[in-house]
Length: 154
Image (tube, rainbow, N blue to C red; front, top):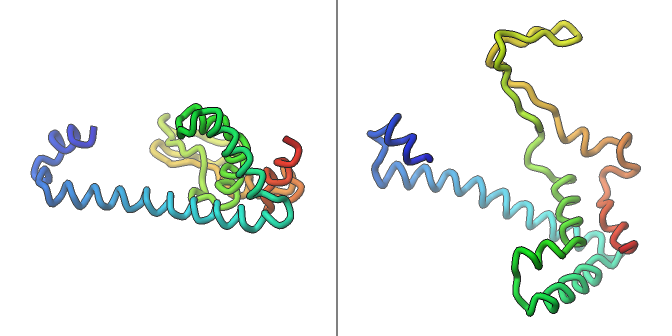
């Protein structure tokens, strides 16, 4: 898709140097986010281990799932790791890279909100997601890993 766009819109940039630079920049962003998520996951597991025994709970789940899958990491095996998924989701809820959600662009000529704000065509609109994920209205202790305490119930 990117190559087709470049062929049509930017044919002068279709050389190894420019393609390489753009690929490195795109990869840098994705590697950085993955590394930070993995680091935060490990820190959250270690932090919650003394109180909840997180490491042993996750170890039992991983061992059981891998035994059932013949020792192979597969998509189906990963889908069976509910506790691991829960801890990862909580990590991403607490330490999220994106502070905004539901990014939309006004496509109509203009929209007037209930409060009287006029949004001209082309205006970007979004929700600030981090406040929703950390509100006491929705969670009793929004800055704690809630899934870890639920692990003992499973």
